[in-house]
Length: 258
Ligand code: CO8
Image (cartoon, rainbow, N blue to C red; front, top):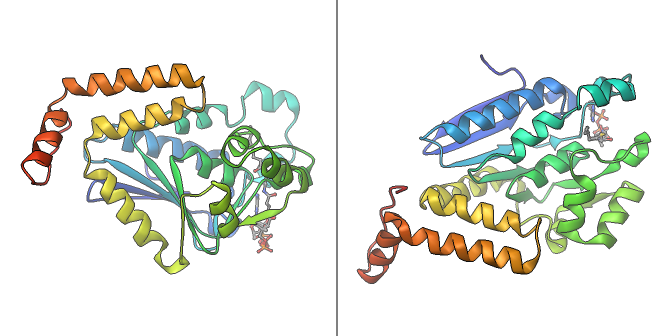
């Protein structure tokens, strides 16, 4: 089925998913999140795709959950439908690397969606925020948890309690984004990063993702054991043999995901 709220393009092993509700600053409604979850699942299982870029428009990555859709809902409706729960889990379960390319507003659920990606490349125009407090609610798809892990308690509390927007340079200093680039170069930079990742063995890009994500969920000792087991396991792959031989033979490695 065709998508109505997102645009998906796949080129050179990179799937680019663009959020596309221009009249609502890409606000995340059920349809958009459902389509996004489906597109990510398809990209994750498509052998031609090796990396995913998630982006919005120059004005807004996404200005949060759709307030019009949510405003009349009751607790019972939210609870029984597990509002956004299914979509959140589908997005967080993607095994291939996902880069968020953020320009303009990434607010509320938009900021949370960007943080669900593996890393964020931000345009110098980007503004991050968790302004749910102004609506009488709090973040609901990871804001209080992921932002706190990424920028620490002080800045996370500041953002959630005041609802202020954090500009791109501050977000980079705080560790929320991996790099800031001029707005006009955002997609070029994101695509170049995605291409670099697409050249690696997918066995290793997936292993990196699993291991780094484990750091957010476990103790240092457990995380170290998990990393070491994965490291050892990669010695059963042809790509380990190829990667190390290529280095010793002073040539480019030809990975085959085996
Ligand atoms: N929802 C619905 N519509 C929106 C949203 C939104 N989040 N944000 C913007 N829009 C719409 C506006 O209503 C407006 O539509 P219209 O032209 O029909 O009036 C259009 O987009 C353009 O917006 P503005 O005219 O307001 O544009 P400005 O440039 O003046 O301002 C801002 C841009 C600063 C982005 C402003 O629109 C704004 O503050 N938006 C709301 C931001 C916000 O509060 N986000 C948090 C939402 S709550 C949330 O995300 C909770 C997530 C957790 C859910 C998990 C469930 C389990």
